[in-house]
Length: 389
Image (tube, rainbow, N blue to C red; front, side, top):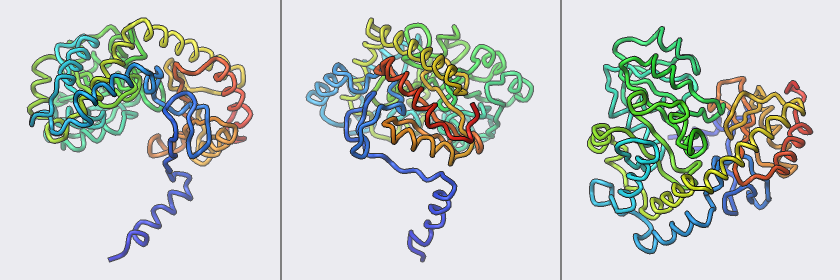
């Protein structure tokens, strides 16, 4: 039998040659607008901590207090005694936040999407998904054994033309994680017909819509139009985990049939306590202030980029992509920014389609106006020749 180097070495070498090799930088500080990675301090524009709550003292204090009361872990799956008081309280508060009867906490967003789709779609069903959906939504349909079909990005007319009567589920991101644009949810709800519409609002909740209640609330829709709402807690909430929200029957069905809920250890209760503190901030005056500041930074960045001749993709969210084309170009641009003290993610295939590599600039409420201006100047100064103005 060949050893790992013999078997996998050519694959890794090919990744390196194609500019697709991935390495994990070592974080040596708390997350925030400034971080230390591999011993170097950067101004950080590669985070999903949109509201700057990951290192906020109130969730941190709630986490510490939760650990003192409940320990470091849950000790069991929810159905085997791991479902604790903080989980129950968090689910009730999340349900109220998004205007649903019930919510169910999962250990990760990936597991939530896998579990929901596998529970709602079977081998004889068809699941229609946006072509740019997150990998977890795509994998959910594949693992369910359903027929996975893809409609053109953010194109409800394409969905309506092609959807058959056997469609069990239509699934979409609310805010697309690599493009930053919002799904046309009102039109998608109409195009879905009698099929259930599932929205993964991982990048919208906390940031988009009235009170930060997400893209579904921004579209003025509720449970009738969007029966299945999924959110993650590791982005704007600044903690960890995920949830699905809907009516009573949906949540009871998930408790009884979602394999990624049934067969995994529950989220630590202390993390649930931290998330409750984050949710209180999101719904309070500080959350409003942070969202208003973030919106102002987004507008400032887009205006500055336009003035500097940087061709941003259309996005009203903290996710601001700059097209670079080829993977090598995006990587070179990110490396040049790194030498100037800016951490910006180069997003390459297979995360995005070939030829559409980009820099994914991610803004947070902890950034300052001066940092936005400095980033724009650095982006313009380091722009590769291959990237047109």
